[in-house]
Length: 292
Image (cartoon, rainbow, N blue to C red; front, top):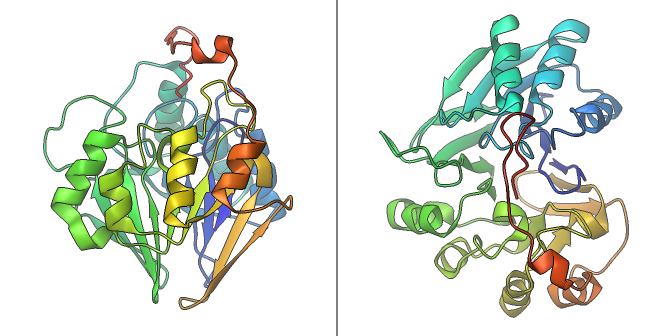
């Protein structure tokens, strides 16, 4: 499970022992998928069997169009694409859908209680909720529980407190996990107490920039991880974070060595200045939105 360092964005590559692959998100639109494609090439990935878009923000699907184009024309293609079904009007999202259509890639809209097999692993969809759940991208962010033998992994995209509470209410013990990819880049809008108390992860992996304009990961999240004794990996400090499991035990390797104690990461984190604290999030659909 390769948590690729893509700055203030998300991209996670999973390779099952049979060689079957899954890519969850693809980095920021400014990168255009280039860094992710390079990483996939370094891992000798010649096909993406499962391509997941947790939601339509440009820091999660920023490379989808170029990755689809690259694998459909240079390699063995894309198997199936998965989406929350909540559209945006950004050029990034439109290019992604155009690539799906141009190359006739199967696109499935997923909702809670859906399930698909990933080699010998089982993938359970915990979010978005079934039925009409509105147009909020974060509330409808695709959340997956992946089980491989006795090992479990939880990833929730940018699901925030309301979606986390709904998942706790609806899925309870199914949220228990060994490893948790921190929601919303380590923002305090996610990793809320109800979810953390139900999930009880041993390890959390945060994907965000070292000097994040949003202050990710937020201090209170790192403080909470420290209080819970969660080993914490942060791409902004550790670089690429690779987890390997045989279905029983697991281990992690990082591109850069640093402590995995959350309190040490908190001390390492750049101090938020007044300018960062006052930043507001704006969206320009004429160019492409940048989502925190």
